[in-house]
Each structure stands twice: as C-alpha cells, then as structure tokens.
Image (cartoon, rainbow, N blue to C red; front, side, top):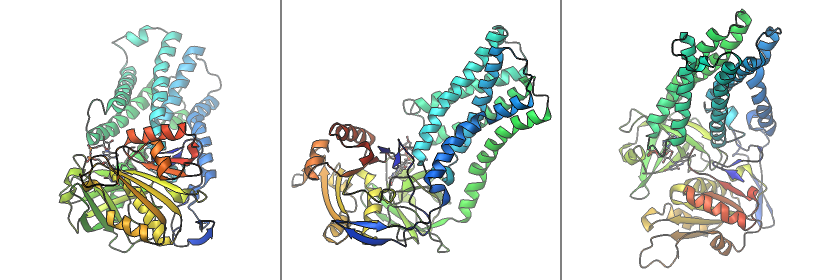
Length: 481
Ligand SMILES: Cc1cc2nc3c(=O)[nH]c(=O)nc-3n(C[C@H](O)[C@H](O)[C@H](O)COP(=O)(O)OP(=O)(O)OC[C@H]3O[C@@H](n4cnc5c(N)ncnc54)[C@H](O)[C@@H]3O)c2cc1C
C-alpha cells in the first residue's frame, strides 16, 4: 500500500517527474485506456537505484565515526560495558546529526521516498536515538560507578550530557503528544528546531570533553565533522534557502473564492520561469510582505502540470493560518518550495482503471490529476467519489461536470453529501467499501487513490483490505506530515 503522498511502504519505486517530463507525453490507446509514453529523462535522484543506495548508505553513515575512531585508536582500554556505552553514544549522536538532514526537505533525498515517509522514518529514528543515548550512561555507570548517574556535584560537561538527554526526551515527548497537548503547530515547530540545535551542541561538548580517548586531533576532527554537517544543513534550511526562494518569489496573480470557506490562489513566476511538477504533488507556500503571517504551509498544487507558467492552490479555512487567506491580495509575493510527494498516477503508468476518493478539500490532488489527463488527452477510465458535508462544500462542480461530458478522461463523478439539502436526489451518507464496489462495478483490477479525512481513509483502507484489494492498489494522501 502506498501512503501519504503516495510513497510505497514496501518498496521505493521509480519516480516519474522532473523538468520537461510532461511536455513529451504521447498517447497510445490499448484496450479502453491509454498507455502514456513517458520521457526517459528524469533527474538522477528519482531513480530506484538512488533510493537503494540511500538505504544502504544510511546505516553505513551511522557507524562511520565509530569505525574511524576505532581505527584511529586500536588499543581501546575501556572495559566492555564502558566501551559499549561509548559506542552507543557515538552511534546515537551520529544518528541525531543525520536527523537534521532527513528533515531538511532536500529533494534529492525526498524524491524516491516521499516527504511523509521520510518524516515518519525521522520520528521512528528519534525513538532509537533516545534509547541509544539512555543506554549510554547506564552502561558507563554499570562499568565504572553508579554514582555517575546520581552525583549532583560533577564536572560541567557531564551536566551538558545530562541536559542534552533531558531536552531530547522532552523534545520527543512534545512531538508525540503535540496533538493531545493542543500545542500550536508553528510554536512547536520553532521550539523543535531550536531545541534540536541545543541538544546537538550540548551533546557535542559532552562527547568532546568526556571522551578521554579523544586526545588525537584526527579523532576530534571526526567527532566535530558529524555535528558540523548537521549545523550546515540547519543554517542552509533556516537562513540560506528562504532567502534563495525569496529571490525567486512567485506573484499572486488571482484570488478566487470557490465557496464560503475555500479559495484558489494562482501564482506565477514574474520572470516566466516554468515550474515543473507531477499532478498530485504539493509544495510549501510562504507569503511575503502580505497581510497574512509569513508561515510556511504545505498545499497541493491543484492545477494541471501542463501549464508550467503558473500554479494554483485551493485552500480551505481550517485553522489560524488558513482562516486569514481571504486577506491575500493580487500582487502579493510568495515563496514556493517544491514539488514534493509521490501521490500521483504519473508514478504508476501501468495501472488500469482508477478510483479517486476525495473527502472535502482532498479533491485538490485529483483536480490536478484530472486536469493533467484532460490536457494530455489521456482517455483513462476514472471514477471520482467526491464526499462533502454540504452543497456549499463541493468545489469545482462545474469543471467536473464539463470533464464528465468531455472526451478526456472517461470520467464518472459521484457526489456524496453527508448533510444534503431536502431537494438532493444524489448519494448521501458515508462512503464505505461496499458502496465503493457498487459505484465502480466491482473492486477487481481497480486502483484506489484516497485523499480524505484521516479517519475515513483508515476505515476505507481496512474495508478494502478485507475485500482482498491488494495494498499495492491503494494509494493515500493524508494531508498531514
Ligand atoms: C501534503 C499536504 C497537502 C495539503 N494540501 C492541502 C490543500 O490542497 N488544501 C488545503 O486546504 N489544505 C491542504 N493541506 C492542509 C494544510 O497544510 C493545513 O490545513 C494547514 O497547514 C493548516 O494550517 P493552519 O495554521 O490554518 O491550521 P492549524 O490549526 O495551525 O494546523 C492544523 C494542522 O495542520 C498541520 N499543519 C499546520 N501547519 C503546518 C505546516 N506548516 N506544515 C505541515 N503541517 C502543518 C498540523 O498537523 C496542524 O495540527 C495539505 C497538507 C499536507 C501535509
């Protein structure tokens, strides 16, 4: 099953996006749906081989400082428990430094996996790091003296290590309990980045001062190189990249209300620079010098990838930032960082009939995919199940109706309302596996793309799996990272 922005759990598949990838699409009709011939030139970092290399490289990188330090000091004098404790700290600290790289939204690392999968991996590794760094003092105390854990009057660098560990624990706890603690995402994210840097610095100082076998300049250089890379990435992502993106800022060329709670922003690069993406991908938007806060938020690109001169984002108000989007004006400037994500039919050119299930504003990736099929002249069979609460929540109704009667794609739209008006004769209630089967005339050989509220997605996946739909035929985008 592929998950959140379309990344596969079970394998890193090949990637089908990149500059020029859309322009060269040719159509070949086989049976009732088109096979699309795609260009063979993709950025090197989209290749499966690169994904495999990254997966192999990660554990090697994690133990590299350990191996180098062992090679520099072959006559290790530490007792077994102490030596093991030091090794745990070294690997934990290296993994901690790599965490900065994983979260830096570097496209050459994100592309083969999808950002959501990468961030999930980052969260899992945080638990591994905490475990390794907690085992470190326990093993050393076990090998030397248990008072190392309890003594208050001790050297300052021991306290640096303790502070790093306490802050790391607090960091992980806050990340896990953010929702339950009702922490504002923006405040949490700022604190997370700042505390991460303090943990890195305190951990480094502790390691440098407490490591009595680090007298050698080579060993110290190895230990310093690890956080130096993390620090460089931190500075790049927080200080350099925002400035580079601001220099290439996009201009808001139109603001259109789709409903009382959703509006579409169209953005274009003032110098006409093209923006290439695959349909279904998203980007991070930050308004500059606008009446809305200059926060970065992820939004799906809803427009067709065939129009590279502009992108459109349809945003629904559901929080403190999205509530003020009506303050955005034509002429406002914004940075666009992306594209990211793997929730795209472009990545799976051999799939058959498609079933798109959209809930609310989850229609946006499907609009991009349907618009792409229309503009490319792809005659695929697509059933769109579009669940909304009320009539006013249905977006793009006229455009979808036009696509239904148009030639490309072969589209059938089923609107489902949970609170319909009295005159509504269409579908109502909840979408479930049985009804999906009825609407698409069977589940066999269909491929499902889900972008709905998370509870609905989880429930649909469970029901589709019960009906023996292969997980490889289910892709989902949760709209959360
Ligand atoms: C891949 C992806 C695609 C999305 N596409 C669309 C779209 O096309 N249209 C649309 O209306 N919404 C989309 N969203 C959701 C949108 O990003 C959130 O609704 C918005 O960020 C909420 O911000 P807020 O301050 O208004 O609400 P808040 O109440 O502050 O946040 C609500 C929740 O949104 C998430 N969130 C908030 N800020 C961020 C951030 N900077 N980065 C990541 N997550 C954040 C957090 O989980 C938070 O708990 C998408 C989200 C993702 C992850």
